[in-house]
Length: 180
Ligand SMILES: [Zn+2]
Image (cartoon, rainbow, N blue to C red; front, side, top):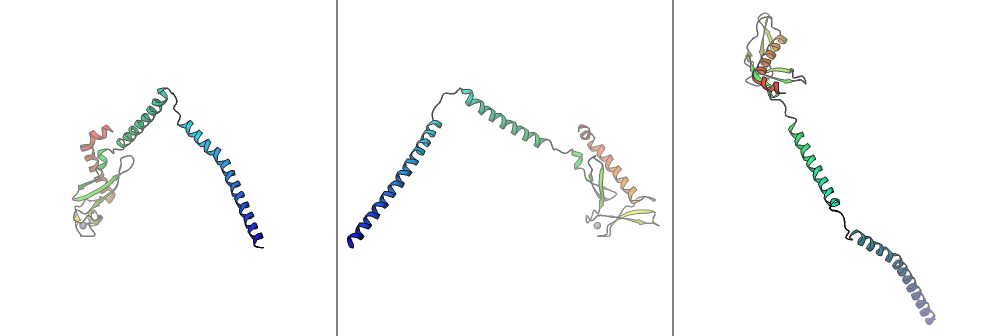
């Protein structure tokens, strides 16, 4: 009985050995050609060959030219969007108050608003003298600014300021406007 067990174990051992050897040789047979292919591919890629200098210099020159073109277009784009100087004229003092405004796409004055010189609060047009004249009044500090003449509506008062701004634009920025 002992002998049979021993023989059985020995046979199983041998079978396992044979199976492992078979697997190993199969792997070896399949992997070796793959390694050979890799070596072949590498020797092909790293093999020295004779080429004309143009094949080396031309791609290099093309890359340099593309880089220079990109730098140039970047510099031009940075130089272009310089707004005209008169566009920065957006605040001035008229009739004792501070007026601020913007410009539309045609360069016309828009959003013209008077502000209190003392507290920077937006002023309100207030009628006085039997409603015939208007004054600019600060709702915050109660300061009252100079009145426009009789029969002057708030709209007309604004158009007077627009004309004053327009005159200053022509006086101070005429040359720059012409250069546009
Ligand atoms: Zn005020």
